[in-house]
Structures are given as C-alpha cells and as structure tokens.
Image (cartoon, rainbow, N blue to C red; front, side, top):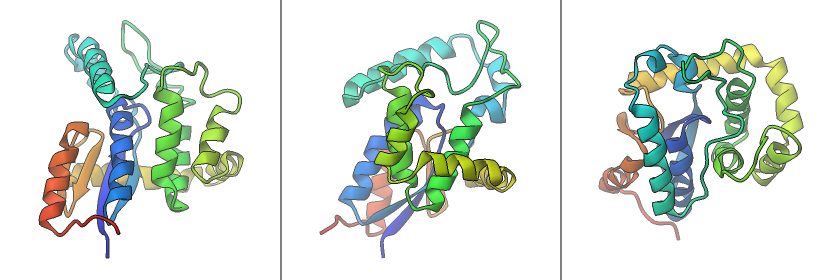
Length: 217
C-alpha cells in the first residue's frame, strides 16, 4: 500500500505553485499518493491578515519567490489578473471575487475525479508562469484542464450546480488544515504531522522514509 500525504494548497499562493512540480515528482518517484486539499486563498479566508501584515512583507515575498523560481528553474511571474481582487496600496480585499473561488471549486472537482494533482500542476503553470496575460480568457484554462485529464466546461457547469456542496467541502479542507496545526499553504500533512512551506518538502520525505517510503519499481 502506498503512503499518503495531504497537501493543502491555494491557487493564489506562489509558494504552492513553486512546490507543485516537486510534489508531482515525488508521486512519480515513490510509492506515494498525494491527496490535494484545495483551500481558498488566505486573503479571502482571513482578509484582516493583509491589514495587519508588516509592510515589508509583500516586497520580500516577491523577492523570495522570484529567487526560488530561479533556483528551481521554473518560469514565474505574478499573475495577470491576480486570482484575488485586491486594491493597492491599501491592500483592501474586494468583496467581489470572480477568480479564486471558481478555481478552488474546479480544483475540488478535479480531486473528486482523481485528477487533483495534475490539475493544480497544469493550471498553476498557466497562472504563474509569467508568460500568459489574461490567463482567465480564451482557451488557456481549458487546455490546461485537458492536459490534466478533465473537461473544463463540464467542471464549470458542475461547479455552478453544486456550489453549496463544494463550498462546504472547501470549508472543511480549511478546518482540517487548522486542525492539523497550521493555517498557511502549502502545508503537507503526513500522519497528523504538518510540514508548512515549499522548503519543508525534503524534511517531509525524510519523515516518510522513516515510515517505509519506497521508490517505485
């Protein structure tokens, strides 16, 4: 039986994007099942966070994520549009959010079809690669969904019909994340132990190896 790890993940988190290729590699390399748990961005879950955060944090985040992308050899740029509608310099979160809730519902539906990890991998590349303006228009998302093995139009229609159920499931993911001992993303949880951040993947592998993580084949 493969080991299993839960991954709490957000479409607005650059660190989630930067972690995803390595999570894909782990599942390919090891007898491991990565269970994706999509959550809404922190800016929507806890908008007061951005009202209280040190003003030095946003520019540091940009610097840090850019150098990590260089280190990992990943294309990277802040999305256009931002998945979260937020005013600057006030950092006020708009009550109208057309992007992140839709993406999160789509991600949950992909999970339910057994395509959660491929879906976040392909869609996050489109959003965060820095090369695609207006990622929400045209066929960008549909093509990414197809590469992940799902049909975007079908998922969108189902997301509308089952919005209440999906939002309840996503809220449960958020509650489970906090119950595991953290609030941020990406957080990997293995046997109840949380590992927060893309820089904890190696530590996660070490812990799983203590529990018999084996390479495939």
